[in-house]
Each structure stands twice: as C-alpha cells, then as structure tokens.
Amino acid sequence: MKLSVLVRLVPVAALLLAGCESLPPGVPPKDDIVKNDPPAGELSPRKAENLLITALGLYTLREMPGIGIALNSDQATLIPAARILKGMGAMSGVRFDSQAQVELRSSADGNNWNFELFDRKSKTVLWHEEVPVVMNGQDR
Image (cartoon, rainbow, N blue to C red; front, side):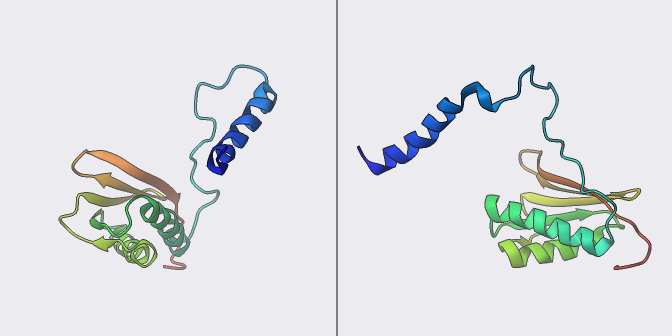
C-alpha cells in the first residue's frame, strides 16, 4: 500500500471511529453556528486600519495575490482605504488599478467602517468586514 493512500485513510478512519460521539445531542441550529460579528469593542482608526490590512491582506494573499484592485470609497474612508490598499500591497502584492475587475469598496456608517471586495464582472461580494471605529481624534 502506498504511503499517500495510508495518509489519506488514517484521518478518515479516525473520523469514522469518532462517529456521533463528537457531536452534541439534539438538533443542529438553523442559523449560523459561528457568528461573523465585528471584533469586540470600538477601535481607533489606526487599529481598524491594521485589522483590515491583516484580514484583507491575508484573504488576497490566499485568493488573488498580485491582482489590481480599484478603489471606491466615500469621503470618510477614502484616506484609510488608500492606506489599507497600500499596506495590503506590501503583504500580498496587490496594486491599485482603476480599471480592475475587483474593487475595494468602503464607507462609514455611524461608528462603523464597512469594507468589501466586490467583483465588478460577476457583481458579487468576495469579502466583507465591518469594524466599529471610535472617532475621537486619537490615532488618526
């Protein structure tokens, strides 16, 4: 038996042996098991930028390294969005391209920043994050 076949069979056998003992009793919930809530607490603008650079940078590194990304931001998030795009470039090699198929959209809604990667061709949201930001003049 080849080693690659054995490596694939061991995890399958472990899962089969675990069986229903690994799941709690009862009916599974109908809604999301893990909620995609924003991080706890409000962040300063700089901390929010760092969080978004990390989250979006890792996503683009995994899914689309080196692609061009257009920018579509409201006035309140234009400067942070440009800095986030620049920071992502250092991490995953993405670059600004006004004609790109993928667009980084950002907007401010009260104390929340909303960022999403949007595919212009398929008209789908590829990635989304909402971050609570406290705008008290610190860390800007």
